[in-house]
Length: 68
Image (cartoon, rainbow, N blue to C red; front, side, top):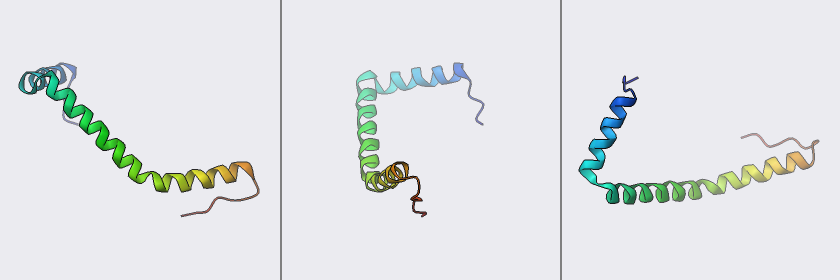
């Protein structure tokens, strides 16, 4: 798509490490991870309903799962 090979990606990562530093990058990564986790937890309400429906369908094969 962008024509970035492994060499170009390594150069970009080295430049990012030089500009931001290792400490700041790990902090940014941690904050990004916690943000993604919070987002997934926010969507978890819908996933629980789907999992509950799937579990009921597996337990009783005669019951068809609800369609959205």
